[in-house]
Image (cartoon, rainbow, N blue to C red; front, side):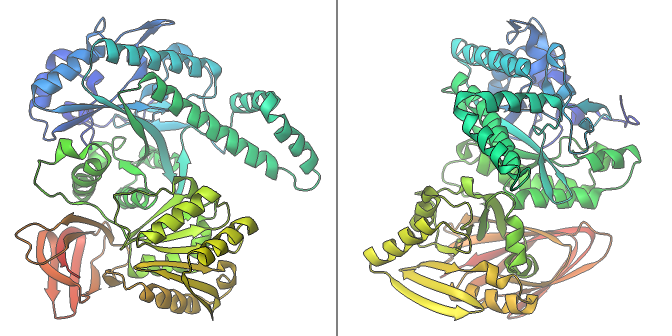
Length: 578
């Protein structure tokens, strides 16, 4: 099945974007000539399981099918002075036929929430159907494939790293996982899961709870089962590729949703939605990809966004930095000030208490939203300019300890204790007493406790008290709280629907007395002229305006006025000092 087939250049087909190389889409004899003009030092090669699968126990990596010869591929890439990184799909891959599952294993299509088969349009207009990874035969086939891949890498001494890909898409602002399946295959697998010895208690609790709270425990158990299967595919690949494995990466494939399929069928212009999808992916801490978008749908502003943000910044940050950056040089890397950590669907909570609306208005795209299980402390990370919001609901002892480490390393932590476990609250109180920390209890809009240690701030609050208040009252509350931290942030006024992205680099010898240089990239994906005012704080100095396209900038002592025409963009470099 296919949509109206667009005219697609061969180079667009094999280099679909973000430094990806679809090696199977061109003759292996042409790999060298195609890659010679490839601009990036790093070549990202997604692994196409189905082209290497020749039969039940027949896996080809050495070239019975010339386009399956991974040894030759790595050799060609290294001969050209480049580095190969392989991307291994850990579930349905929307850019591959059958989601990447070999034909002989493609038995049961995955169903979405509407019980419709997942269908994703590729750049050529073909519809890729997704098949269930909860099918036992698919899991066994995948396990065998990655074990053979690991053996091949080891025996042939392949010089390349492997990252896993976990594929997602956007429906509106909701992030959906291609692994999700609502077919009977999932239900049958879930039934077997409940019958296992260690899970019988879950099944018994479900039966008891049905009279009290129908379905809630079953939904929770299904989520846990889904997570366990997702983790199983990751651990399977990690063990098989030990020594070559790096980590799994969450991707969002822009244009890969059900609504996008309908828009492609009717040839709607969704360039503004595609741009928003890229930035929504960044906010959710996912890597955005444009490989599903046909070339005629990639307007110039979308190409600029993916080139400037993903290729030149995100990829450098995610993959091995030393492959991209020459020793002694500095590189702009993604930067954000605020991080939100939530449990299950409690992301909406941050909007209900007013903090997300004020950030979206005054400090747009300076934050990322993550789940509590991704909360991690990094020894080499500077937390002095980080503000961490965490939900007490769902927080475990490990998470609380992580928050305390961030606080003790100069971070600003705001913890909602509305529905926090009583035992954890007592541990927090004990920590304050044992360490003789300065603590101040305040009642302003809600009950607060403010703990200080050097540059670190730890603020507990009862968010549920804030929810019923007017947005004006919430704005007053959060402006007061954020002012306490003395953050180095530029405040925006106006510019609704403009998209922006911050990155930063360390200062070098030419940057005078600045501590760092921050770059603000601004894009106008709309059909209207947009105006933005930026308040110039005392710690910031505008260094230069660059890459101006259909935009203008005027400056005064305390303010920068920006005007951006439809499809326009620009970048502003700021020196930041203490």
